[in-house]
Length: 282
Image (cartoon, rainbow, N blue to C red; front, top):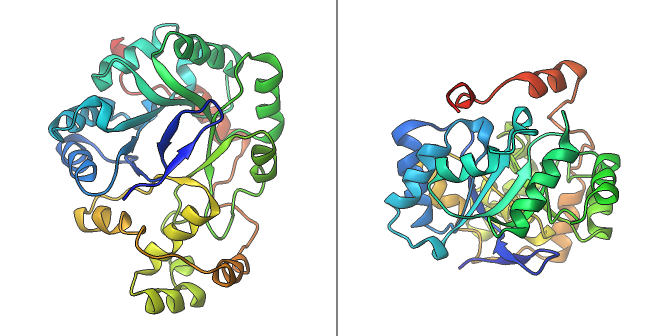
């Protein structure tokens, strides 16, 4: 079973996706193919991950037709003024359209980059466009200066930090939130929280599956990743139970109001200047 979410342009994508960060070579080819045949229909990658070619091979290895899976990727900041970047991304992935393409970070000339996304969207090369890691003021800047409102905002989100800095704004503006690192970077303290241990026993699930189910019921999209085939398969087994309203309220109490991902001037500078590993060859 797959839940679908409807974006503000009417396009539907699977709520659950498979994340591919820090996976490379034959491993990610095999894992993408495995995921698509074990409960996932959406694959999430990025220029900066350096694995789009291998992800594309995994898509083909799955044996599925292009219309039977969904593909999401992110434009890298050093490509924000490269008019060939989206076309080159399509080539690396080996597809003629991308379901969702978003800007990875709010650095460099992101207004120009977003207008590149708009152009590709109008040409049918991208079915939905959006942002990742942007602050509210920067999202508003995009809305004010560009023609097409973002459809997706990918952000750090988990029970310890439920996207508080953008949640209300995105809901008001009909922008779908999508969680990266939905397990809080695999934080052991969160996985051992008493409420998750209790619910895992009740529903005969793992604490990981309880947290992923929380994301579904919060209405978030989510893209958990794993290198383990067992974990990949288990992470998709979250559609056969439902948390009660009271249990969802109990989970609210673990919120620490602090993200794991800290934005600093140094980190933004690195993001603005570190090239993707393929750029020298393009």
